[in-house]
Length: 163
Image (cartoon, rainbow, N blue to C red; front, side):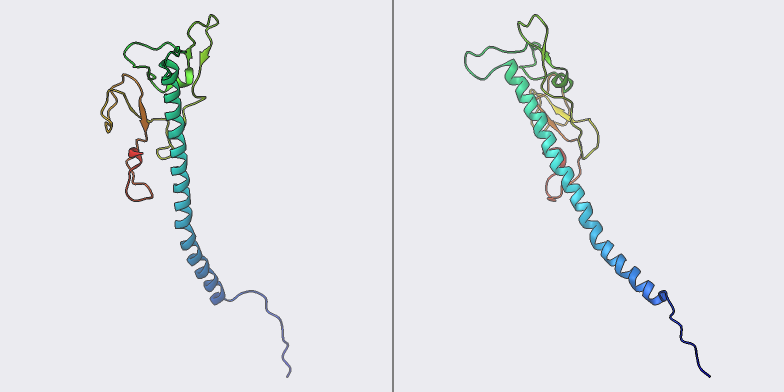
């Protein structure tokens, strides 16, 4: 009797389990790296957004009280603010130019950037009159901004609200 030889197509259960095991090992190596890369990107964005906000605050102050001797202020500010913006919205809304009959405003930001760590527009604020490490804003003016996240950064030493 002759047997008929047929080509069987497909994979065995053992081959399938080996492939699944290899994929699980590879994915367990890739996921932590991906999470690290995502968090690193958020940290870079946080640094950039803090720089943008702090530069806008400094530009507002320079427009209100120029550091160059003899220079004339470009915008009028309220008494008691020491030339610092009253809030972050003032940077977006702008302030009227001194002596401009048309009432054109000088704007310092297009929009308030988001805090990528907390994923909100709620920034921690410090007034010029507050202590440098204060976490409670007195509400008089905005001298500095910081993230409200108390999470540990990737360096393992500093917290985001200390940046």
